[in-house]
Amino acid sequence: MTEVFLLCSGALAGAVRVLVGLLLIWRLLSAGKPDGKSMAVGLIGALGLTVLLSLAGVDGFYRMALEAVLIAVCAHWRQRAELRMGLFVSVFYEIGAAFWQFLLAAGLGILFRSQEFLDAGTAAGQSAVWLLHGLLIALAVCLSKGREIEKNAAFRAVSAAALAGFLAAVTLSEQTVLSIPDDTLYMWTILSVVLMMAVLVFNINRQYEVEKELAKLKSEQAELLERDYTAVNRAYQANARLFHDLHNHIGVLRQLLARGQSEEAVRYLDELQAPIQNLTAAVWTGDETADYLINSKAAEAASSGIRFQVQAEFPRRANIRSVDLCAILGNLLDNAIEAARQVPEPEGRTVALTIRRIHQMLVIKVENSFAVSPVGENGVLKTTKTEGGLHGWGLKSAQTAAEKYDGMVQAGVSGGVFRAVATLSFRP
Image 1 (tube, rainbow, N blue to C red):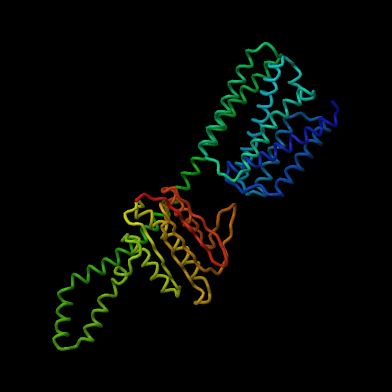
Image 2 (cartoon, rainbow, N blue to C red):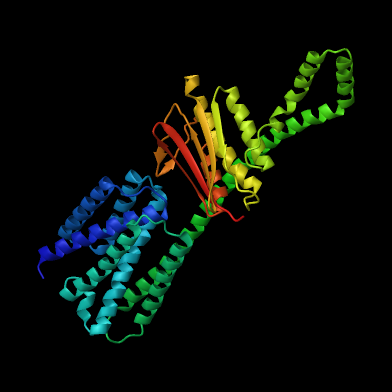
């Protein structure tokens, strides 16, 4: 087999490994999807590394290390993946690829009773190399599909592969067909244990990140609930004061009516009604808490010169809890009012809320005008607010509430209007 063929085969195999590594980081780290530039740089880098290392006569260890760095840098540069975690994934991905290439070569050697499968410089050895890379290409096809991978299922699959590799490495020490140095077997056995530990550490880190994000969501929800509770409490205190002084008010009204001063009596009643007018506003959903929330947001919008429209068709006696419904409505309406308030022309400030029932699906749509178009990063809309804090968590909090009902929240800009749509499944 000529040196040119081996060089081309190594370069192509390296390109496959880099491409699959970028796709893995996209899926495992929730980074951006690899674009044309990241894949082009990765593939050119892999080809260059293979040629240079082959000409320099450097062994495979340095090739693995440099490929791992190349994958991590490309993912960080173009996919905005965290460099530390990207390097972690790429290093153990390269170790796993080399480990399984050794296991496949040894398995084929035992099956065909030939030592040549362990030598990548032979035709038999190249067949083992491309058996592995054929599997990597199949993995790349699966990863590139748009369907989201379930994290726990991915963890179980990778854990099973690592465990199977460990058992295979231990079993090789008992075979007598191939002559494999003990040092080589010890090295791969130890690395298989390291791979299993790496999978466990990665899963623990992933759970930690999820719990940290949930803690932030709960903190943000608690702040929103406290704010709304304060508003409701103020309204009920005003109502309580009204009823406490009811006998005095009745006395004043009796005197006004007895003197025939009906207009003054009407004005007096209007003044009494002002503190609780929000509590007696329109009924939209039949859920008292949600109706109060919508009416309070409508009043907030009106005070900012925002045209607020509501069209509601809400299912009666659905299994949607008030706290979840208000988490969705409150966050979406808060974001919409904040964005519409920044529109300089008062006539251009609009917020529209639509609630529709479609069979067993509830659709909540909030549309609003805006002055500054929201920007996305890694497929996630970023807040346009600059003061930091808990801003930017509104859509995430609404998403968390929607997921309890097998739903989701989607947001985007279309025709100069920002649109956020939450869908929930419910049972009557």
